[in-house]
Image 1: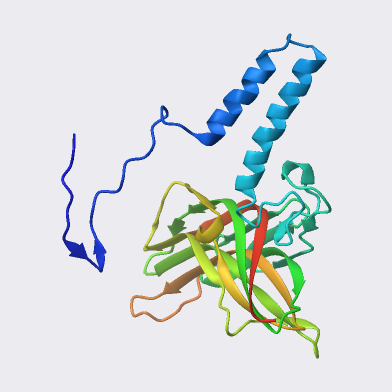
Image 2: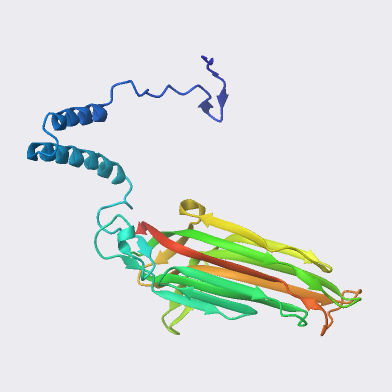
Amino acid sequence: MVMSERTEEWGGWVDAIPPALPSVFEPDEEADDAARAMRAVMAYEHGSNDYVQAADGYRLMTLKGIHDRIALDHRFDLLWPDGLYIPSAADEHAWPFFGPAKRYSREWTVDGPGWSTAQHADGSLFTVASSPTVQGAIDGKCEAGLGFVFTATDQLARLRIEPELAFVGRHQWNVAPPPAVWTTTRVVGTLLVGGYQLDPVTNQWGPLPSSPWRRHVVFDRYNSGSGALAVETLPFNRTGAQAAVDVLAEGGRTYLLAVVAQVAIRITTTNPYGDPIHVTTGTFDTWGSLAGVVRQIWLDKTVYIP
């Protein structure tokens, strides 16, 4: 079926039918070269030295085409890319590059109403926050983070951090307060991508005011009153631009570029008038967790002032 072209302009562009793409029957220079090479291979007896040499020529020709296409993206080089970081104990042969790999080097946890682990060796993060029964009101968070240290050599550059995130979030609400107690709960599971800056005076990591963290909300659950729900399971996968954040880096400064898993929990207990009250009975078994792996982190640098 032939569709007529639309010539009305929209947004400065002509909304027209794009041209047809080549069919498999139309001439293709690369395919013609391959066909000729394979005819040369098949001219020899299978298994003979001449056959093997001709087949190796076909192999090299085919790989060259693949390498040429891959080389269009600077991140895919035969040598290990400057911007690719992987877990410190990962098998570098799982990546199609040669030379020494760049590795994660830092891990940490932040204590709160739960438990967390971080392993830069395998790129895994885990954190859970919960409300112990008969504790009533609670407000806190747990974190697990990993990353690597980067020292800027250019006066001013933009660093785009692109992690590969493969995580699962879980949440359950279960609250049965005493009579005349009004309860609200909120549990939020978040993955944060960004960085810290080293203070050379205190030798402590601090925030980057000009480069806020990017928040990926895996779940955000609010409930009120009493009741219970089944456990929710929420897969979360992001990579490339979907997960990326930009950080401005100044020459001579040191940065910790990272991914952090955070679960925050807040439970309030009030009387019918909205005044906070202390609760010593009832059930408060609400929790949330994040678990996953940061398989790799790409660091793409754009130099503004060398």
